[in-house]
Length: 127
Image (cartoon, rainbow, N blue to C red):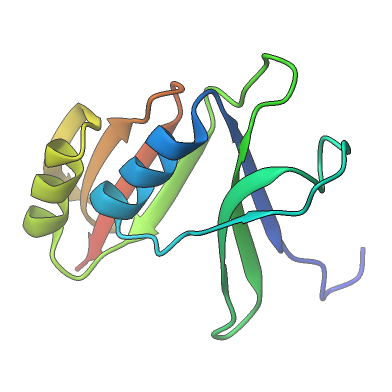
């Protein structure tokens, strides 16, 4: 395996794009941009909300409206935050379902939530 192989894309298919994009924006602080590439390819076209990180290395994250009734469920995504208590309060206010509130973990204070499609989102403030 080449040593420069790394993750560059995460796509989550959701049942209701507008509702999910609002949760990820307001509850998890992701500045998602809504676009529509047109076409009918399940993986590269249609309405979606996305953002890309370019610091250190490139990573593109996108929420896509599920096109055939299926959606991503059971994935786990983790985000680093500066203020775990404030981030927790925003996630709850935006409608995320709490799995557990902030608690100490070996890597820092972490809380976990379900999104509207059954994916697990974690927030971590490093120690």
